[in-house]
Amino acid sequence: MTTTDNENFHADSVIVTIPLGCLQRNTIKFTPALPPRVQSAISNLELGVFEKVFIRFSEAWWLPVEQNKSSDRIDYFRFICPLSTCEHVPRGTLNFFSLARIHKPEPVFGVFTAVDIAKYLVSLPNDELKSLLQTNYISHLPNYDANNPACQILEVDTTAWSKDPLSGFGSFTHIPVGSDTGVEDMKILSQMIVHAGDGAVCFAGEHVSEPELIQGLFYTSSGTVNGAYKSGERAANKILDHYSGK
Image (tube, rainbow, N blue to C red; front, side, top):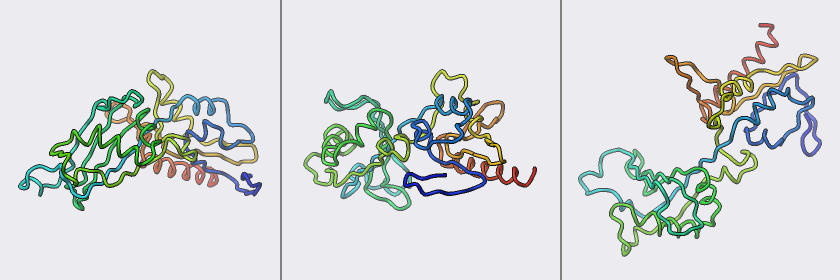
């Protein structure tokens, strides 16, 4: 293996864990080239965008009356489409979840968002993001009072998968709608590629999670941390079996 600064490493076999988006952008070059069916499996799958926004306040003003504050729970508020009247804001869903009644409460909202609006929100400078959220979303939450300083956002922070070249500009793998090869594509990527001279390449990561048959239905942990972990174990065991002669 040769790095971008021409440093060389030698190994009998390699487990490749770079994300699907990087494989699709040919971030690394394979010599010899990957088999055609492996290349098509990489191109057939898709990389989705899922981002998180965190919003901090000085106190949890949105909680209900005092007698109900003691219960441990996560409160959800879903904005099905943007309440913003700004035409340049993409349409999409924002799911707010409150961290103010968990075992270590904080006056914080987390926000799940995806696709175009996710890309848009995390691309904004913090001041612009705070203003957009304050005006078009925060003002519609329970107990909001424009004259109460506690209802003003103190700070925001976001993930940035859609801007990260090391993630392939995305955050999770999914089978495209209408695909009839998705399950087979993931199985192909989970197989070991043995080259002449007995060297081998195995892929690991959330994009190679093998579907599991449970009560007659296929389920997959694709797109999850546990899926990536299981794929790493599987790849390591395949290489160990290969060299132990099993």
